[in-house]
Length: 467
Image 1 (cartoon, helix red, strand yellow):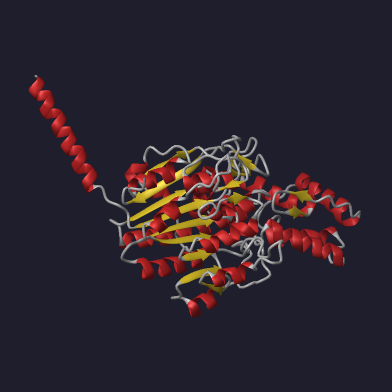
Image 2 (spheres, one colour):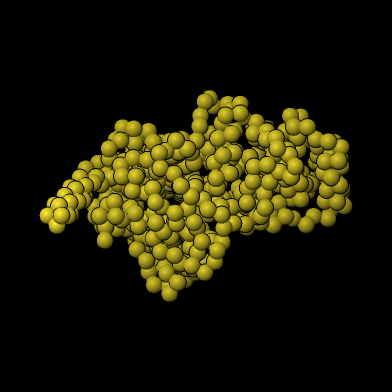
């Protein structure tokens, strides 16, 4: 019996050792983060694909078919409801931290991101976001600062020497201390070629280190929403394609790590703008699809991870007693809530909307209400009441959310739009809900037990044999 136990233990050790030796290390890692993206965002986007008469053909949420999937906790060290700084730090470093802390622990000591560790092993690194390049989530992969130190965070982006950085703009390009360099100058000093927009990238691709930003040099916020964007403007899809091209050409032998953030899912969800949030989720999904197409060419060498930093807006599918959903209505909203608010504000100031009928026409053209979406008498009366209060009597107390201030009439119209689609919102802020997780590719099975955001980078470390 003892001899049998010894042989069994020896066999177990041999099998374990063999499995360890045969474990593959991904050559290419895509780490995709939908900022503010919940299960409901993903589900509503898929419903829109299936029932929304989508103009661009048959599509689907590609990561819904990934073989590994679970739910991930997002809480911060000092709060059940997290912020992007603390959540981004957890996703980048594998450590919980306090609100507003980026790349530092609760004690404000620096933490090391998985991106830096892979850079030190010789991998190429790309950090891509539809938001500012020195905002919370991208910053967590290269910086160690408090969130309000945007200029210092920006400098650490250049200091990282990552191969490819892409975003809308710098949040704070100029220093408070005028003896310090402007961020554009600092990046050039550190060897970066700054490409402003798609055309500039095409002309300068192949440079050693690239920073790709929007062509609008006055921009300090995120990219224009997909729903508002003009043809040829910089978008997340283009940035991801450029990043793959740059990193693959430069690091084909060793491999690369790429973080992709769909930042504006969050930006659109704070003001509860459903159609804009779905369009942002669509662009994020298309960016993940680019990674998936790359995976299909390199299936034994590529790992794709998709998750979110937190949930924003408390989106629910179903509203009050209604059990009917109309995802096709998303087609009829033509501009974001933010753009609609600016339009109403401008026309209110110029006196162009001097009657309810003119105002109703503007709302119908941009939201589909009345023209495509039925509006009953009580609902129209509520919108008319808002019109008389804010346009006629000029009593305009704007709806204030984290990133925007909306005209009350725009807020009322977009809230009615959500109701008509059949969804509800519980907050203008983040929630503590779990968020989705998906994975496919080389060593994806190692992520089956992931249930907290810190587990993701720590599992990457195990897979990549990083201590």
